Amino acid sequence: MSIEEFAEALGVASRTVSNWEKDPALVPRLEAQRILDTALEQLTPAARERFKIVLAAEGGPSNGTRQDEPDDALSQAERGVRSDAIRLSSRVGSETLEVLTDGIVEIARDYNNRPLVTNFTDLQKLHKQSTYLMEHARRPAELHELFVISSQAMALMGSVAFDLGRWRTAERLITVAKGYAEGAGHRSLEAWSLGLQATIAFWDQRPANALELVEHGLELAPPGTSRTRLRHIAARAHAVAGDKSSATLSLRAAEDDRAAADGHHDLLHDSVGGEFAFDDLRAAACETAVFLALRDGERTEVAASKAAQALEGSSATEARNAIAHGLRIDRAAAWILLGDIGTAEEALGPILDAEREQKVSVAGRLANIRQLLSAHEHQSNKDAQRLGSNVTEWLGEPDGITPES
Image 1 (cartoon, one colour):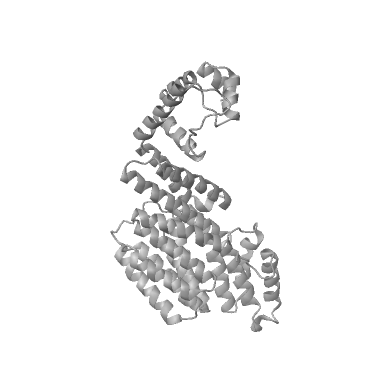
Image 2 (cartoon, rainbow, N blue to C red):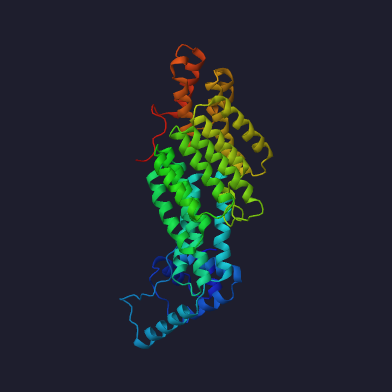
């Protein structure tokens, strides 16, 4: 709607609306305030909720007055009474909470089909809106829901930062997410955040730190999927440390937790899902990564085949798109370990021919491929050297991934 159309609908001059737009701190005269109040009352409930959310994103209403405009004491007093009345009667409302929650769920479930920067920007808005509304919440249940929304937004922002290689930024965001989750008493969300911090730690070659974070998460995690995910993260940390026995034990413990998950509904993994989910496909992909880190080509291929079957049976498009590339690279690595360079090159073809992937996990896996190809046993293999050159060209950096320090 244009300024002229809005002014006509209100019955005021278009110049008046232009002045409001140019100077957000300007307080309309009482007559104009009554016109605006009437227009707001005539909106549909859904439109009013959208107005409240947009208002939150802009930082809320200003109670200031222009110093260069004369204003008598009675008018100021009336404005103050009106503001107090609004403040005392305001409540966030179920419709507002539903709009914010739906926004989180939409981003979580469509996480891998959207540009990472778009995800981050939208999540920032949701976090800003929810924190503004916290100041206006009058009911404990509303404040609890807003804490959950803020925690989920910050956790997903941390996931985006990790995917972009901004690991220190990710850790700071996740720390805030954990604080909101703790305040809301949402143990599954707090455990998920600890799991992401542990994932960053083992990618950053800090497996001992990763295992400490997992142990903390296991103290909080509810039975079932939340614990299963943490066990798989522990297995990967053990594998990075070269501890095959402990990695295997963690995978067995994960199977036990998976069995315990039957019939247990997790508020985060099941209700929200998407980037927060941890299903059979993600579990199989983790198992593949464990044996690859241990340089066990045969068991990597077995686990990768299992993951491929889970991928075929997955109905979640976002999970298929996100994991398929990583799985393809891991299978190629297994074939390199088994000495089959030709099959590895065939598997990597679609990835090397595609546009460079933003996610640091893909680049990290390809950097591992290059490291395998540079081993002594492949030095005289022309096919291996050609594939290594193609991988280096795709990476674009001599040292592969360069996460934030």
